[in-house]
Image (tube, rainbow, N blue to C red; front, side, top):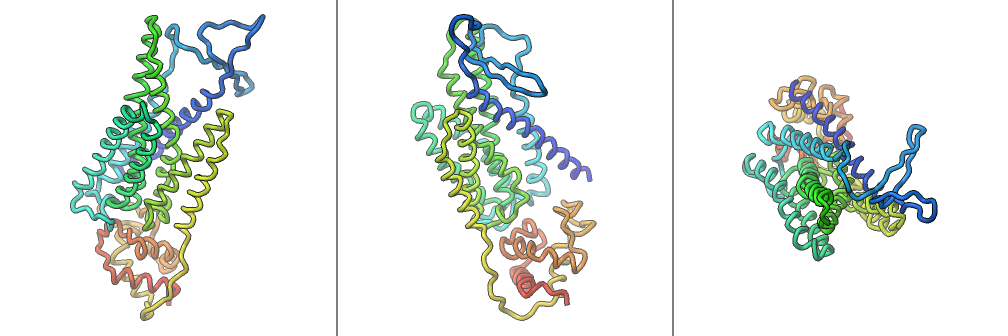
Length: 395
């Protein structure tokens, strides 16, 4: 029970911290494009160092926000940094809790490249997060500085490769979450290793009366913009574990790529609207990505049922032997102490009501039992599918 409450608490904490981080990210991108130059002419208020201002309303009050270059350090300067740190730390702890406990069961399964040992899965899980940051950082530090378009194309190609790689070695749910964790690792490292240090150096030089390196500021802003563009794709991966039709699909890597295109395109549209330079063309990749995802996941017509009739008793025996250890009111599994997703197979009516999900998870994607820890055979999967295709009768 303790691990269940720990998982619940971490998920809630991660959600709240993520709202804070992504909310401030969206807000500051909007704010940066909302400033208007100060009024000029006779009688206009003169403010040294102020480059623009904007007005907002909240709670019946007007708020005036000024954008200014640092001339002296304010006594109450707030750095937006812990929102990102708390989001990542809670997410990383969740990753360890869900995917590293239980002998790595959630990282193992029938995949294109089956992993031989949990330690191999752990190494890929952690090593890919570190490696992704190192490759991304070097790419944008050297190539992106002079040729940002080339660096962008390479980054997108590497992202597609990483998604395909994750979906090849990990079960779909773990692959989607690790893609989000990989992007999240890049985002948090951008904040703490590139954006904040650059801001501190620029402020320190300005306060010392020296001219800051504005190119360094532009590079930090570029990383901040990268973070903003991938926020929606990361949100897709965060909620993906509720949608097995996507992560358990045989083309799950293509689905995730399509969702990434949709998220980045929508975010680009949002940013250009805030700039008052709306890029209507962003509807095209977003629409194409959506059409592709819908087309790929659209259910195929049921196949013609072949083979001898299967009785409920036969199907029920398979479920009792291979599924009941987890999907019962009191699981006997050594990892799950409550039925996953609340799915319980204890009455014939309940089993029949879950027939479509059983067919998809156990017979089509073969992602259940998780890691095939109960050794369900291909013959048993075929028998279950025949029972369901024959109408999931209880007689």
